[in-house]
Image (cartoon, rainbow, N blue to C red; front, side, top):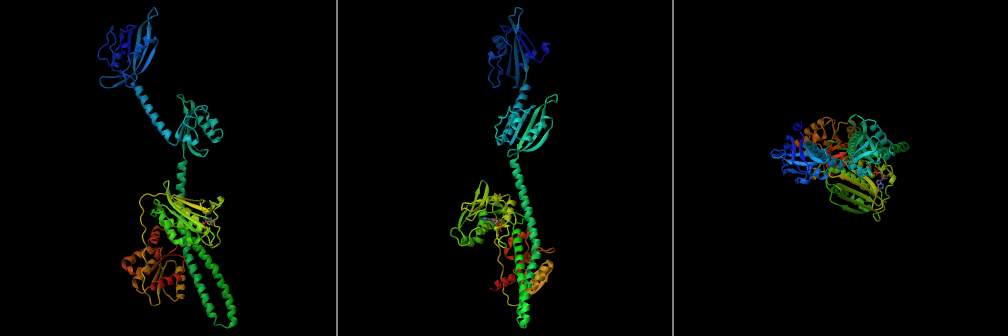
Amino acid sequence: MLSKLPIGVWVGTAPGGLTAYVNEAFTQLLDLTDDVLVGSELPVLTNIYDAAGEPFAEEVLPWARVIATRAPTVVDGMVVRTANGDRRHLRASGSLLSGPDGEPAHVLVSLVDVSREVEAERERDTVSARLAVAVNHAPIVLWCTDEKGVITLSEGEALTSLGFAPGQLVGQSAFDLYSWHPTVCTLLRRALDGESLNASVDVGDVPMETYLCPLKDSRGRITGMMGLSRNVRELRALQAATLQSERAVSLGLLAASVAHEVNNPLTYMLGQALCLERQFSGIAEWCENLPIEVRAEIRDRLECITECFFPLREGIERIASITRELRTFSRSDHEEQTLVDCRAAVESALRLVGKELEARAVVSLQLGQTEPVLGNHGHVVQVVLNLVMNAMQSLPSDGAAGNFVGIRTETRDGKVLMEVSDSGPGVPVAERERIFDPFVTKKGVGEGTGLGLFVCRNIVRSYGGEVSVRDGEFGGAAFVVTLPVGQGSVRPSREPEPLDVGRLDHVPLILLIDDEPHVLTAARAMLHDEGYRVICSASGSEGLAVLRSRADIDLVFCDLMMSDLTGMDLHECLAREAPLKLASVVFMTGGAYVPEARQFEHDHPDLVVQKPFDIVREVNERLSSRRN
Ligand SMILES: Nc1ncnc2c1ncn2[C@@H]1O[C@H](COP(=O)(O)OP(=O)(O)O)[C@@H](O)[C@H]1O
Ligand SMILES: [Mg+2]
């Protein structure tokens, strides 16, 4: 029986060490080349090493230890290097066999091949080490409890965000630890009752997503539970930022399309109002020829009517200024964004309002180089303008002395920062969020729309940035814009082409192209009144046909967004067929909210006028500037 066992067995005399019995497995496991003969000593073993690769010392071999200690022994970590280069891991045990007189007579040594076990153990160690790296560096907590809720394992990098070190909680009751947090206790109880569950729980101010499941033994009895918790603060912040940016984009789009829709009726309302005003003043002049009694009566009534025009025009202009503000931040998802140099945007804004600013305050500029951000140059200029205008308006208007406005740009911590601060009254803490809401203004009617900061925040957020207000270095408010740095290099913006000027010495002929009939009616009436000749076309294609067939048109006002042939199409046709005629075309827009139209506005700022506008003034100005 012993000779057939896969266990190596050697029995030797004690203390002589002469072989009394040896089986085949023994010589095989030790990779001995010669048979061990009964009555002989074991050969010197030169091919046995310890786990560290050092030769195994003779005195720690089991038979030597049994003789020395007279106690049973188990020796692990014996590695046999076989002739063919394999490593075989052995576990050896030794025990003393006593003779009838009770004295040691023999030593029994057995050898078992544990290579598989050792290999499995090594693999387990590798997996554990890798898991430990993951657990200790990922924002998670891996924790287990026994069936009473006493923590048996608590590891993971996210423990630090909860104020604990790995392993620190082992031995404590999770129920005691979270007695202040009923939700956690309920979840623990449910997991210990056998439920596997996912839950989102805020532990203090740390948002955690947790998976809990019961641990069971081989008979299915619950022995505890395991929890895997993930700190999702950064994830939540990212989700919130994305949502905010999406909201800003759609809000911008909505505002721009509303502005566009409002501007068309506004154009003809303004047109008709101005036309009526002119008609009535004509009547007033004509009245001068009437008999005095009639004249007085009519004049009184005319004055009443004229008085009505002022609030009417003011109302229209107010609506127009609101829609103008709103459409500045229109941007669709499809619109191509470019890399914008924020410092250059600040410089553009200063070119527009610098003179006025210097008349109102001592200006301190710290314009550091900035990394480019992904966006739209015009929008960033708009943001800076709104902030600078607000700073200016917060200051007393009696001169620059004692008033300060600071503008700063820099790149810090991977973000572009723009700051506008002033020495005005500042913004009370309680109002710091509210002032970014639409229509919140402390300025008088006609002075403020309450949309400036709302527009700023929407533009900035749609770029994934943020704008906020705090106390500034000059004692007033400081508005700080941060924008994420974009990748790539800045594309220089194109210089607008100047309008070609010609000379006119006859009654000018004006062509109006718009598919909104009321706009045509109002504009035609007003221009007629001024003595101009007018032709109207109710569509882009009709207008193009007129332009192709006639050479005597002095000025063309063409709507940008029309259903059949747009202003952009007309521009393209003329550029190809008759570029000289292009010099006399002006495009009207009620706020371009489609990307092509915005691009067109951007590329041809001198060719585009924003509705509503006083067409008579516009025509007069354009024609007289040609004559000069
Ligand atoms: N630099 C500033 N200092 C003090 N208050 C400010 C400043 N900028 C903005 N505010 C406050 O925020 C309000 C909203 O500003 P805004 O949205 O630009 O609208 P508006 O300028 O048309 O009033 C202002 O009316 C003002 O009360
Ligand atoms: Mg403002």
